[in-house]
Image (cartoon, rainbow, N blue to C red; front, side, top):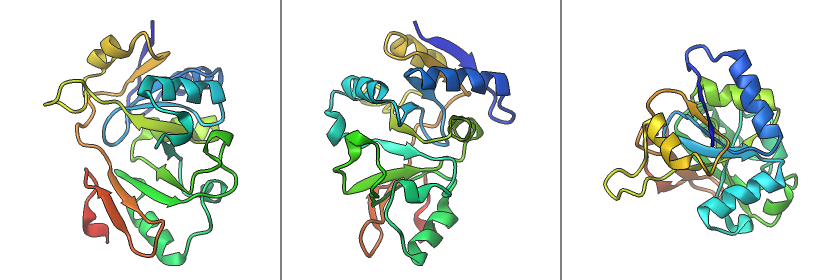
Length: 206
């Protein structure tokens, strides 16, 4: 049974964040709020946790298109190749915000992702998510949790999320109702930005 933990975004309780970090560090899976839809995540450095997420999503870990949720852009060089000034300016304008940016991968990726040519980077505008990755000290990998209902693509109610995911994850964070529109995905790995998915993030930043 997953634990259910209420955290208020305006002022995340440090003790609650500590509990989340302890679960992540021991290989636990969490469902947590972002500035778009709720996400399923784990510590990027924990192989067993990564494998659990891949198994839930029914995909091979090496081929999984997980996003790396970062606290800010300061550790970007750990995961992506050196980027040019114009690309960095786009990132600075858009983040934190409801965007996922696909960038050319660097050499320091965790083992399962070593062969990947690109990586998705996310810095959500949500204090709970940002506090978690800051206190953890490294990114969490993240993937959106989909609903099986064809009409409602994403579940927004934390209690319904707990009902569905209780036996699959270790913790569900109740950060209030989530959004039902995913992030805008933009590929910046080539010369020109390519819109892969139009979501909550406005395209006017370009």
